[in-house]
Length: 248
Length: 214
Image 1 (cartoon, each protein chain N blue to C red):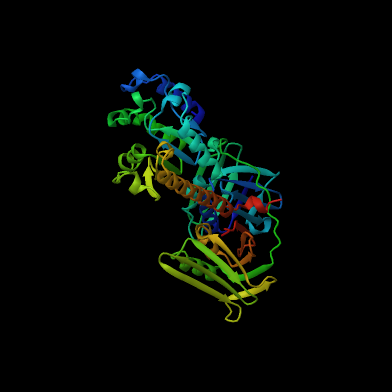
Image 2 (image 1 turned 120 degrees about the horizontal axis):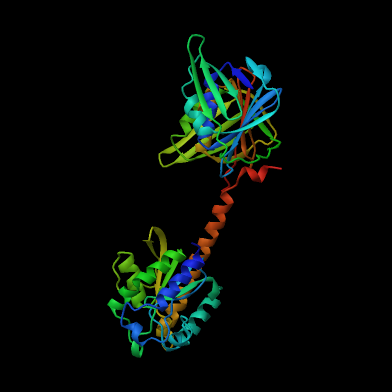
């Protein structure tokens, strides 16, 4: 049972980001898709990385398989992924073989499956979001990188044409306004203008690298709701990242 | 080891203690009593005759006043913890001596570390001086000058509010300390409520994704 993904660097970013808030994650290999899910111990953040079969160069699961993995172990290996590397992961009963190949050199790693890794069922989140904004990964990455320098809390607010990200901290205040008029927002679908909600900025900062490598991000948000960042990748993969709101 | 087990060991150790001369004349040692999870701890001076006989703190006339002060401020004796800086009765109800307080400090400190109160109310000069000066490292200027204020002190790694006041025994027949004691108990209650409200707020802030899962 194995797969080859054309973009090892994206996998590296996603697993590294996941390892920052969760020790373990689950790989579910289905005949038509694969997804990776993880939730942090305090239940503040959850990630679901969905990759349809078509996004792989090759994908050969013979039956549905669920594998629990240490995100820390995996992250250490995936960090060595190069810009033009492909990633091949092969699953056996007791180990995983990981190969990076840029067409010239192939690097192979083998890690044992650790049966002692704590795992649990992760329930699904089904939230109907009243407000959705579409922005490029680069723009959102820049916005988060600016704001995280100032405070610990990210306040998100918006209306029909703007999405405002701001933070106040010891250093001062930071505010980034993404607007439809200036073309920074690609789309805005807002049913609850004037909403305002806050999140711990650390959890959003964890996701900066995957955000930067994505094509675009759908920011789904609403008063008193978790934020959902839906990252869309060129390959057709999709990453949904949820962070619980802070209530003041 | 859980708190109950640690407390039982401490009680046994205190009951068999021979660290100072007070053990020679006591009837029963008085370790203290109350909730092991109390947020408020009262530390008095020493057991009197009634306490020495009962093996419980504040059961005589001063204890009755303490109970009244607690209940009139909406607090129950069972929800706080009560102990003394010395656990055995000094003969003739004299003040505890410094070496006796220090001999007993091992137990006093162990009790504070076990309960980990957020507020300590010291009753009288000896308790106030021990907590503020000996444990907290700040100067003690006597109860009449120190009372009516809240002192933020780090005790065994935990930030603790210390509120010194008169010993209830001093207020039994004197109206001035009685009035001050009543005022100080109102201060204790207000800090206790503030603390409880902050904890509720902190809990509310910690929303998780489970709140949104089906």
